[in-house]
Image 1 (cartoon, rainbow, N blue to C red):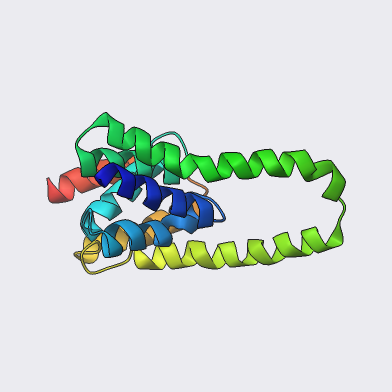
Image 2 (cartoon, one colour):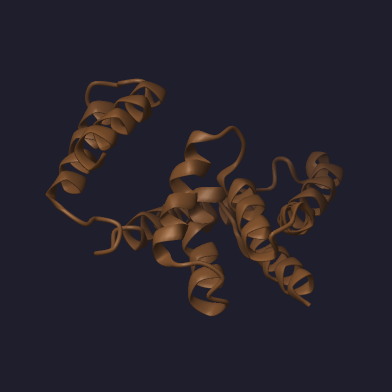
Length: 175
């Protein structure tokens, strides 16, 4: 039964999650933390952090992890990962089939312009939903947040280097 629930949940996320993984994060969090209560908010924040550091799309990485965590088997990972990919695969196949016909259609371009704007809002909502008292426990967390934002945004520090530095700083502070 859990495999069916995983499949239906992640096919829904894949079907209605426009804008990629970051835009889907608040939707994923609502489904797996709030609705099904498969994992805690802290675990979800950890999943997001690990998913950002590992290769591949964040939505697929979270599906793989949650599938394994919920079922305790690789098959849970396979079910959740497959389910989140199916809608995108079908959509890409359909769009590619009709691409040439509607390529210069102004109505289609306008629709995607509207969708693009909403995706930015979804990404912002996901970021804000990750800032909770459980995830930002102390002042060090806020300092890490602000310093990392400035280092990446202003000084263009390589994110991989920043992740390594943050891991070391976390180890030193929280040991």
